[in-house]
Image 1 (tube, rainbow, N blue to C red):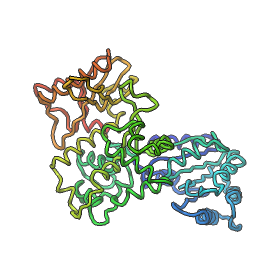
Image 2 (tube, one colour):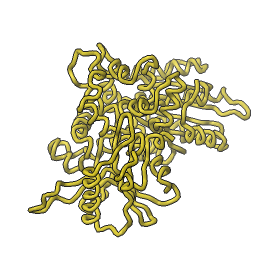
Image 3 (spheres, one colour):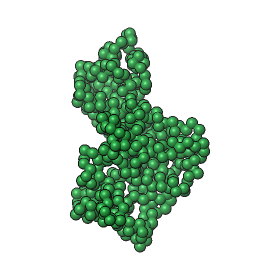
Image 4 (cartoon, rainbow, N blue to C red):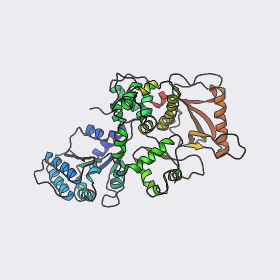
Length: 479
């Protein structure tokens, strides 16, 4: 097996392996993002002990799974009745695994599944680590699981015996565009750049979803196969995705459903409460934080003094969930539904909005393209102030503002074209100029403004093109 990307994670794991002390590593991230694959490939399955919890398993099932793993590792005793007994048995097994100059690697996958209600699993894990494992300089324990919020709340941010016991945490992000392109190339795809970009706008950088693509089909045919064919795999994924992550998935899915409708502008917490009802307000902050940790939504601020840092905007950013809500839920028997939408206004409009989301997921690449990696920057979105009486101008919004410490603001216009350079005309130039003027008036900024175009194939030269001193293309985003 070959790892695509993950250079930082591999570098970090190399460093931790050479630390000369006991290590307790928590790896978390969105379901299907490749956590298990990363660990298995890095260690080449060379574990002193490995066990995986059962999604949806009862306490008896989880204990049985752990016991069978103990037996596979050489344990000859009776089946433990409690988790304290189970971890004591693990200690006995590991005592027999010492090898000079070699780590004893423990990998507990799908860790949240083991912790069924009132099982005492976390306390037993706490006892195992604090009383024995942390004192063994060759022990290297890795835990991970799809229920990211559980990992964060119960292991990383544990307030009990495991408090501050995690030595390192790794948040595994989805692939970026460059990693997605590398993955597809390794799998034998010979698609052009726009096909890879379109793939990302539908599936995001989720390795499992990418593994379902077929190189002998076009991107449109693949989308039909995955979402609109009879028993299409990703049409059924949506419910499985959220139900496997959260104990009360309905509340989380209600938030996702709401943000999907407002996927372009996002919503404040106050707006979410107003839409869901007051009864949703009690645990809403917890639910929102969980969804952020799972990479489904992002929390960001806009350039507006009325929106405080503690409130801000919540926006759905999971590419798969957005596509599913817009198209995957459609009840159609046409297995070529997406292909037949090619060049339709609906599909073109959707690509444009999806490209804006793709750009927001590649801010480091944009900063590199405009040459400001060495300058401290903050990025925002911006909404104009509510219109005053008699103001005929519409409320304005700029999706990406890059504010730099060298007293420059890049106001970014994001434009998608599927096959050619973007051509700026006089009417669109005037609209953008008006938005910039509105921004300067509302914010009172004294910084210099550089209009910046982010597009797919670049900017076509004409009498208006000099309006954009800076241009970023999809080729820059793929670096």
